[in-house]
Image 1: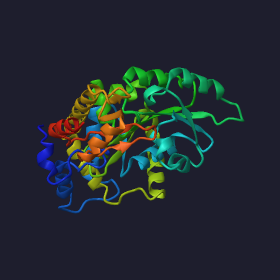
Image 2: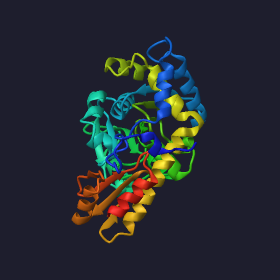
Image 3: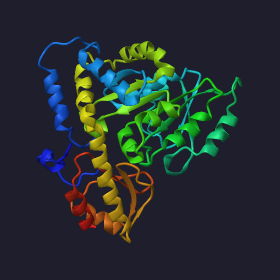
Image 4: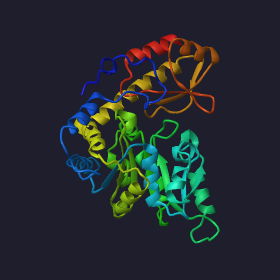
Length: 352
């Protein structure tokens, strides 16, 4: 599908690289919501669109699965972790992980006390040696420590890098002798997938992932996320629904979330949108690489770029209208979206 981001954006300001959540929703998804609004339908996920999307996801992931729709990544992460980790258990994640840095304690709150244990690793990828170290320090059956019950991996990571299927399998395999699960925060799963060129199945359950938080919001949706439970944890779906209801996150008119996924998955639009964002990000990174006043800090495996800018360069970019986020480490984060245009990339680099 051809994507003319400039034509679709109308009067949206150019050179906005603050986040892919600041981007507009794709028109096809807005049209799908309008189409779902033409008649009555069963509520709370009992509608035909929800069933259709679940059937489509079974095809995409090549396995049986259960799907629960949510409206935010924080809600989907916290709900998923709440059925994987008991209150007395521990969740391992990278120190930069969204569940640790940006969710205001939601995973701990939803699990009723689950402990986050953070790990190190370059480019926000969990280092295998550090994972081994922590697992050795937290043995099974030791009453004084919280037993490891979940390993959470972000794909893309918070540095815009990707775990390959082999990377995921290497880390998941470390938990094989424990009653533990692997959770994947896939807020930018589509971006990781098209960058790696593998199948959804290879990057998830075939590599040892039990539950995926599958994000559409950052890739063209108005606001739609999905918790995907693979066969190893499908028996926890009823509990997942109960927790969603009890926490006030069960949308009555679920069909409007399902409608977004239906349009997003149709004809692989979700992959086309991610591919466009990734392509724009690589072009911007290449331009920065050619500048003496800029240094790209992490591999660009998706649609995010982290770059160290000189103060004069940063000022020139801002004066030209470029918007980007100042990261806590002092670098600048640029995020390309499905509707970032080639012209915007050219204008940004020209301003530098």
